[in-house]
Length: 253
Image (cartoon, rainbow, N blue to C red):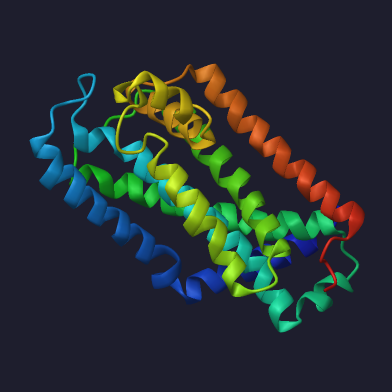
């Protein structure tokens, strides 16, 4: 394992993020804070508590997951697509480094940036809503698992995309709607039985449910099922990356 090469890619990507700190970190944090103001303070004050938790506090895990999903995919996909777009990817491919090491560098940097954003959002949330974390280590585990998994997913999208339009299709038309429909702003148990059954086919439900359990010990599905679904999606992304490495899909085009 060429750790020096992994470190070089990782440090380069992290340095690029600090050069554009407003766009990379402050912008998503400010956007999420506005959600806290609108949904937590303004609307939340007019909505009754859900299972004993104030509405403003109830939506915090969902908002963090929403930010993690979008930011992980965005940063990982653009991180690998831009070198392909500018042609600098050939410098990386011609170096004595395997694609596994390239993946570790880019995905590790994207996941790190998403995790930092997640912790900043959690740090700012108590200024707007009351917040408590019943199981901190489980919360951190879900946060890291979600960031790594969807950074891998974003990395795959960045390789698959052959234009800027395709980079936007999945986050805007698939991930964001699934997150809003995945119980981020409500409990799935509040839905009619038919729609509750349909919603359970949404993989984001399990991420939000497991993450919310670590805060308030409230969940729409059991914790074991949430963990199993999250690990399954991680495994699916790893298989997709393995297939890309094996076939060379769009690595040199």
